Length: 426
Image (cartoon, rainbow, N blue to C red; front, top):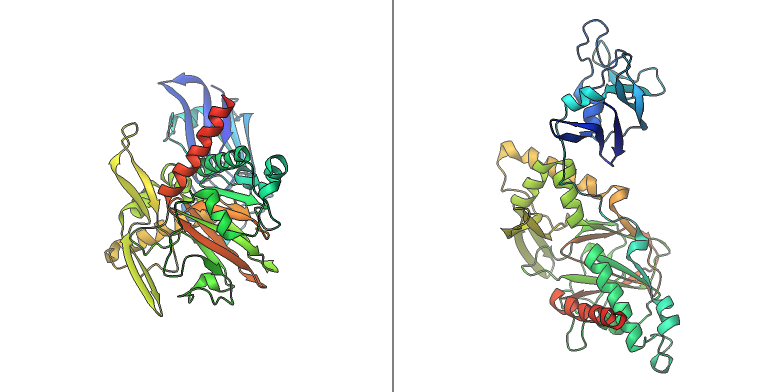
């Protein structure tokens, strides 16, 4: 029985040419394949064929160099051949040493793979989070060139015609609905005017203990309670904002007034997609821990303190009728306001930390992140309940204006524009 191979980021799918006992495909983790290598040149004893390789030496993030599905075993059975970079294994004294080989070869009989399949006909899988910045980018200058309202524009702020504004906001609706983040290039220099790209003029921003608009720069004098990382030039790792608040703003946008001289690039992760990937592709146990174990988010500043307790991944109260799974409603993730973990028994605390590390390592994979280097006049807006944001450390007088918005103000405003464009194009 022949087979073809579909390579995924963390596992391989073997699709069998014939369905036997209803099995049409099977998924295998790469670390499982490496651990079960049948070769007699280091992984199995040449005489007894017993396993020699120790599971502890196999990196859980191991990737194959290449895979061939058209190969055959020594007995001419259809096979799948996996080529690996060498890994250090234990010698006769228990010390790790690299084998003298350029690559390691594992040849698996297709029948053996089918007979040892542990994940067959799997339907509930998730793709990687979006990580292509072009998918979330809107060039306001292009819209202005096509739909500019020259009579009402200024040097600081280019206005769009009614039709152009509706098309722009429809694009925002599409990007935020699908990806949770939108990068707007060349938007302009007027932060107050940009606010109403996203909400109706009758609505307003959400003021916080920092003020109405945050001016994130190292020489800040406008905001209160500016004794926090955002007002320094230090890197700020992935997080959601205001995790310590009972009610968290649904959206935030950052308006670049001045970029850093060096560094300061922003990056984002669609945490809802990352959580789903964690659940089905990496570790259901880690997902369960992060959705159930409470975490103290404790903001302590010189003149402000707030505390909220919640799991990092908060699920809805009612299961989805279609899947019977509780859907993710909010991500609260902030390493700099995370308090000491005291709610987990001693014998279970290591497991919780391991889950946290699995999650964190996923988030910092390049294929999970959208990277954006903002220039003066650029804007990025993101869903603060579902998208993590971060920035690199920097030098120079970087200045970002930060604004929080209510989801209940943003979605009706953008949805109306989307409906207008759909009607106009019908």
